[in-house]
Length: 63
Ligand SMILES: [Zn+2]
Image 1 (cartoon, rainbow, N blue to C red):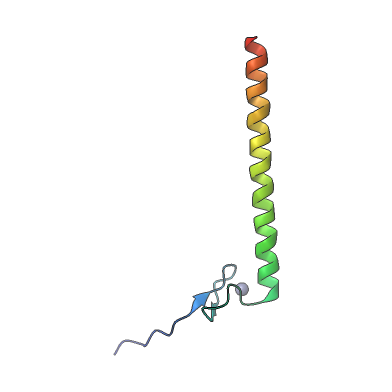
Image 2 (image 1 turned 120 degrees about the horizontal axis):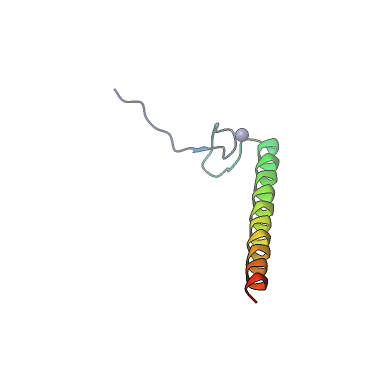
Protein backbone atom coordinates (compact mmCIF):
# COMPACT_ATOMS: atom_id res chain seq x y z
CA UNK A 1 0.00 0.00 0.00
CA UNK A 2 1.17 3.47 -0.82
CA UNK A 3 1.82 5.78 2.05
CA UNK A 4 -0.78 8.45 2.62
CA UNK A 5 0.79 11.76 1.67
CA UNK A 6 -0.08 14.36 4.24
CA UNK A 7 -0.24 17.90 2.91
CA UNK A 8 2.98 19.55 3.86
CA UNK A 9 5.53 22.03 2.67
CA UNK A 10 9.31 22.11 2.85
CA UNK A 11 11.52 24.65 4.50
CA UNK A 12 12.91 26.93 1.75
CA UNK A 13 16.36 26.77 3.33
CA UNK A 14 17.01 23.29 4.70
CA UNK A 15 14.16 21.31 3.08
CA UNK A 16 12.69 19.99 6.32
CA UNK A 17 9.00 19.01 6.16
CA UNK A 18 6.84 21.71 7.71
CA UNK A 19 3.12 22.56 7.83
CA UNK A 20 1.79 24.01 4.54
CA UNK A 21 1.08 27.34 6.21
CA UNK A 22 4.75 27.77 7.11
CA UNK A 23 7.58 28.78 4.81
CA UNK A 24 10.51 28.03 7.12
CA UNK A 25 11.09 25.47 9.87
CA UNK A 26 12.65 27.97 12.25
CA UNK A 27 13.52 31.61 12.82
CA UNK A 28 17.14 30.77 11.97
CA UNK A 29 16.20 29.47 8.53
CA UNK A 30 14.03 32.53 7.89
CA UNK A 31 16.92 34.82 8.79
CA UNK A 32 19.27 32.82 6.59
CA UNK A 33 16.80 33.13 3.72
CA UNK A 34 16.44 36.90 4.17
CA UNK A 35 20.24 37.17 4.15
CA UNK A 36 20.37 35.19 0.90
CA UNK A 37 17.73 37.43 -0.72
CA UNK A 38 19.61 40.54 0.38
CA UNK A 39 22.85 39.22 -1.08
CA UNK A 40 21.14 38.30 -4.34
CA UNK A 41 19.61 41.78 -4.61
CA UNK A 42 23.05 43.30 -4.01
CA UNK A 43 24.48 41.15 -6.84
CA UNK A 44 21.73 42.35 -9.20
CA UNK A 45 22.53 45.99 -8.34
CA UNK A 46 26.24 45.38 -8.91
CA UNK A 47 25.48 43.78 -12.28
CA UNK A 48 23.33 46.74 -13.34
CA UNK A 49 26.06 49.09 -12.21
CA UNK A 50 28.65 47.22 -14.25
CA UNK A 51 26.42 47.24 -17.35
CA UNK A 52 25.93 51.00 -17.02
CA UNK A 53 29.68 51.56 -16.60
CA UNK A 54 30.48 49.38 -19.62
CA UNK A 55 27.82 51.11 -21.73
CA UNK A 56 29.09 54.53 -20.65
CA UNK A 57 32.68 53.60 -21.52
CA UNK A 58 31.54 52.21 -24.86
CA UNK A 59 29.59 55.36 -25.72
CA UNK A 60 32.44 57.64 -24.58
CA UNK A 61 34.94 55.71 -26.70
CA UNK A 62 32.74 56.05 -29.75
CA UNK A 63 32.21 59.77 -29.33
ZN1 LIG B 1 14.85 25.03 7.82
